[in-house]
Amino acid sequence: MSMKIACVGVGNIGRAWASIFARGGDEVALYDEVPEALEAALPAISDNLSAMAEAEILENTDAILSRIRLCDSLSDALKGVNYIQESVIEDLGVKRAIFRTLDTEAPSEAIIASSVSSLPPSEFMANLSGGARCIVTHPTNPPSLIPVIEVMLGPATSEETFEKTSALLEEVGQIPVRLNKEIFGYVLNRLQFALINEALHLVESGYVSAVDADKIVKFGLGRRWAFMGPFETNHLNATGGIREYYDKFANAIGGILGDLKTEPNALSPELLAQLAEQMETTIPVSEIPARQQWRDKQLIALSRQFDGARLDNG
Amino acid sequence: MSMKIACVGVGNIGRAWASIFARGGDEVALYDEVPEALEAALPAISDNLSAMAEAEILENTDAILSRIRLCDSLSDALKGVNYIQESVIEDLGVKRAIFRTLDTEAPSEAIIASSVSSLPPSEFMANLSGGARCIVTHPTNPPSLIPVIEVMLGPATSEETFEKTSALLEEVGQIPVRLNKEIFGYVLNRLQFALINEALHLVESGYVSAVDADKIVKFGLGRRWAFMGPFETNHLNATGGIREYYDKFANAIGGILGDLKTEPNALSPELLAQLAEQMETTIPVSEIPARQQWRDKQLIALSRQFDGARLDNG
Image (tube, rainbow over all chains, first blue to last red; front, top):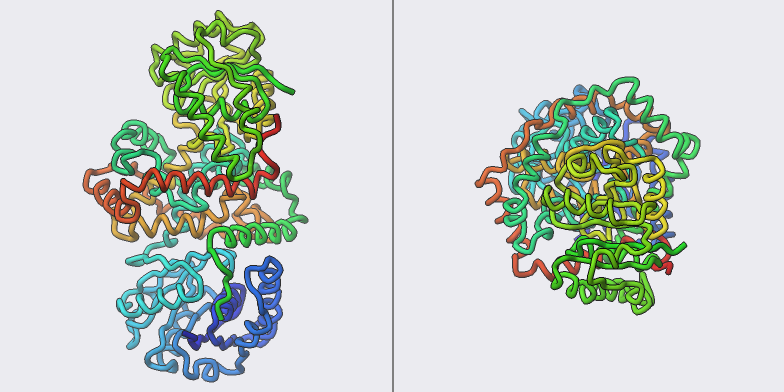
């Protein structure tokens, strides 16, 4: 079922959202108060779609692009929409202003979802008459190729808003997960940096190089986590499942948990210089754009392998 | 260059090693003081190789199996070997005894590597006349499909032993990483449980379900970590590389590091029951064997995608 979507704020994140919704078959209106950002959006989206078409995970990029419409005014973009994806800059005053405006001007049934990454939604979604229809949908970089979306409930978000948002995201090939209440850093980044914190300590203490820590993840943990979560990994490591696993290995697991470096790493200039030196020896800064393209190709290959059919269902 | 290998102790881990070395072209002698274990080894290795042949990542399983020889005695297994992979049970007395015996009876140039997982190697590799040739090579489950090997230096391990061991492991398609000194739990499991510790706290505190935490890893973090380590992921998230990344996001990263749940999770019966209930609803215990096969198929598919050519180079 095709929906009418407005993407408000079309920097990198807003463009990725436009690409996701349009390739999923939705009609997408783009608005940005910076005319240059609006103008740059379509060529960027087109490039992104072309790379995916080349990899044969979607087909008719022209049809997808034809579902995207640039709007000169916010009120034009909001006309008749079912869902608004807000991706303006990370500034509390700006977020507060746009949420007040959207709540006033958007059709009363439309969901208002924020891509906010570092500000607490309770600070700009509270005290709105339409607080029940406001929600957070937090993507991961690069958003058009990583399917998970953290759907976090705001201070007044209704269950109906959560259900409709999840259904809409699934409809366009994303994987919504539910964060029941506001949490700093969301879950994905907390899990990411819990692992990185331990890695930083181990590199700093001379147990392992940063390059070898990377290898341990990419040729070890990441092989499993590409298609199973950590709990499923545990579950499949004992014939009796996760219950038997945590029972059988209680001492070993408790021992490791108790031995982890728990204090937040200080990110000292010396450690960061060491990290940078190692990573730049492996991948010089001048080669980063090419390596980013390589990364995206790998992500597309994994998407083909694990996400089944093509991504375009428009 | 074909090597002569002895696998001493052929439970699950020892068999996986035999499979790895034999498919890599080495001659492998198997010994276990439990005759039943020795007898069960070849059929198990054959099954493992057949699954890989079916997935077309190796070819001639008969030729591979023909390089494996069962030995009635340890002295027979050690004849003329270049390298010994010890995988006997995790018991300090047993490990001490086998290391004393191996150091006495093995050819003087042979490397003696231990698959030890939970005991400190300093407790059974110290005070041996051949301490310089003793080393730890720690695989990850399932070892025949996860290429990373943590190569940890023991109390007296020489650089030459490290270099030769790494070269041998690379020759048979593994990815050796260097742990410079003894560390409890190795690095892979410390990184794994650093992430799991945070996930357990977040599930326990009601922020996210275990099933959704799994989705966040498998449809998010794991997509990237299947082919890039966490530091390379950071490096590619800013055009100036990891230096710019940690500079630009210093506040956000420091904020998350400082907010992580640092105390070791208590693994309470209530939490473990909740985990088990969620995982068993998704994958009933009766379906675990089938799901393990599915897991291995996915690992083989990833190996085909990322490890390039076929694994058999014998």
